[in-house]
Amino acid sequence: MEKPILELENLRIRYGGASSEAVRGVSFTLGRERLGIVGESGSGKSTVGRALLRLLPGATITADTLRFGEQDLLTLSEKEMLKVRGRRMSMILQDPKFSLNPIRRVGDQVAETYLRHFKCSKAESRDKALIMLEAVKIRDPKRVYDQYPHEISGGMGQRVMIAMMLLADPDLVIADEPTSALDVTVRLQVLNILDGLVRDRGIGLIMISHDLNLVRNFCDRVLIMYAGRVVETLAARDLDKAEHPYTRGLLAAQPRIGGGRAPLAVLDRQPEWLEEKA
Amino acid sequence: MSVSVETRDVSITFGTGPAAVRVLPSVGFSVSPGECFGLVGESGSGKSTVLRCISMLTDIWTGDILIDGKSVREMPLIERCRTLQMVFQDPYGSLHPRQSVRTVLSEPLVIHKLGDREERMRKAITDVGLPVSFLDRFPHQLSGGQRQRVAIARALILEPSLLLLDEPTSALDVSVQAEILNLLQRLREERGFTYIMVTHDLAVVDHMCDRFAVMLHGEITEVLPRDAIPANGATHPYARELIGASLEYENAH
Ligand SMILES: Nc1ncnc2c1ncn2[C@@H]1O[C@H](COP(=O)(O)OP(=O)(O)O)[C@@H](O)[C@H]1O
Ligand SMILES: Nc1ncnc2c1ncn2[C@@H]1O[C@H](COP(=O)(O)OP(=O)(O)O)[C@@H](O)[C@H]1O
Ligand SMILES: [Mg+2]
Ligand SMILES: [Mg+2]
Image 1 (cartoon, rainbow over the protein chains, first blue to last red):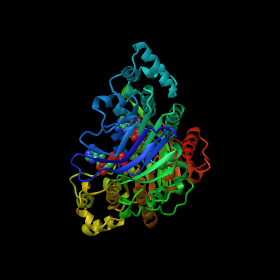
Image 2: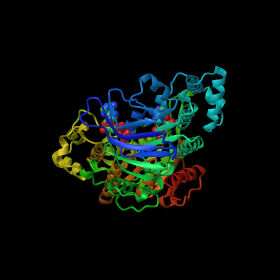
Image 3: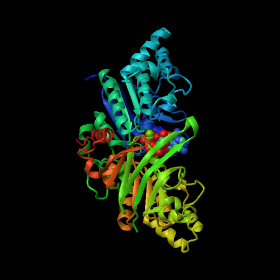
Image 4: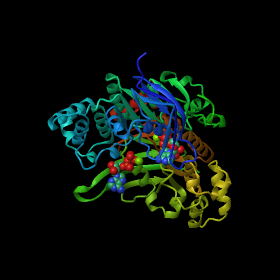
């Protein structure tokens, strides 16, 4: 079997000052695949994603194993972590507005990402940025290169983020609700672009989302999180065959096109969901 | 009592001079008494603006908006509040953090000089499926879904006939959305409310609405019956694209 990109065993995370753990014993292994993490808000999805990049100041992270390729993420120094973050492992967030510098041209920011990770001339980095903007299917890359973040749409902003992230040629991409703020037509375009690039390059993808349809269509495997734990793991195509009552409850609560008009099923939360072993 | 809504040639421009933006060039549609009418379209297409015009949250529009044949412009404020109410997307932003649920619900009753306040508040909070004890809670003691229930209770307290719902479940988890949609469905059956509901989710339209309008750049491209969604019966290219993308996204081919 191919060596996994990421191995996690019994990951636990407690925020500073919190009375209980936000993540309570999460384990999974990631290969060159697209792994979805779904669950309702507060279930700990983003906390897992940020822990992998060690972006949780003040939080206590423990695990039996937390391995990224050959490296142990638990013991890496912050200096070594800087070489991992953005270069070998990168993250794309919901709103590009918070990730882009509002007063600098979009293209320069993309080029700078390349310069930060690879030795080359300014001109070379500009060429790389333009090629990448084209790869995320921006029709007029030269024009977009010179625009400022407020001048581009949300969908365009997310393409720029994808371009920036993939320039460094990472092994792992963590996408946290990357398209939740986008209209459905644009959302599909962005997801198809991300999907194509990730697959072509054999990059591992962790897709964090509250949206069952998204993970069903754009992931190979899905973890379902509830209250800081993984309650079920399924192949995406088998999502409808879920057995855990929480997963089944989420599926049943969702209105569907062509579905009936009977009242939607509501979740009947059971205390044992908090504790049972996945 | 159910009311009809008729909008004719509604137009609104924000700003003046060279900075003026005509957000709605000319919107017109009619909604039957007791109907649930959806408004969909890309963000920025003017959906919320349409609701703000109907509710007179903004009054700089031109054209006609009639509720049961009566112009909203000519309705005195008191009558308007008792005819229509609005529910917004963000259950966090729409309640004042230092006001208890009791204060939120009693304010409109005081303004409208209505008696039996306690009785009306108990009824409204029970109608939205919350225990009466919740009257003494503050927003931070409520979950997102409970806040949206309180926002709906506030809209119900003056017993309006028309509810304008602006993405009422977009900020909620799917399990909480189910509870709120069920609540809205039940209230419509029991009271014959007319709803105009903005949403970006065609599955929600299919579940709730009888007909819906697809908006693009401030214009209504097409008004379609709910049945047009599963087999994509739209004719306008943008409406077709929107429904097509929603079907693909849901994998409901
Ligand atoms: N910076 C923080 N400090 C303290 N608690 C936090 C912080 N961020 C998140 N939490 C808590 O951790 C839990 C998991 O949050 P999160 O990972 O953001 O969930 P999700 O992404 O699934 O919505 C929640 O209970 C949340 O309130
Ligand atoms: N008060 C205002 N002043 C200027 N422009 C506005 C104002 N309100 C809305 N707009 C603009 O009108 C357009 C439609 O907005 P809105 O009705 O909120 O769209 P939607 O609800 O469909 O997302 C947007 O381009 C928005 O920027
Ligand atoms: Mg999150
Ligand atoms: Mg809006």
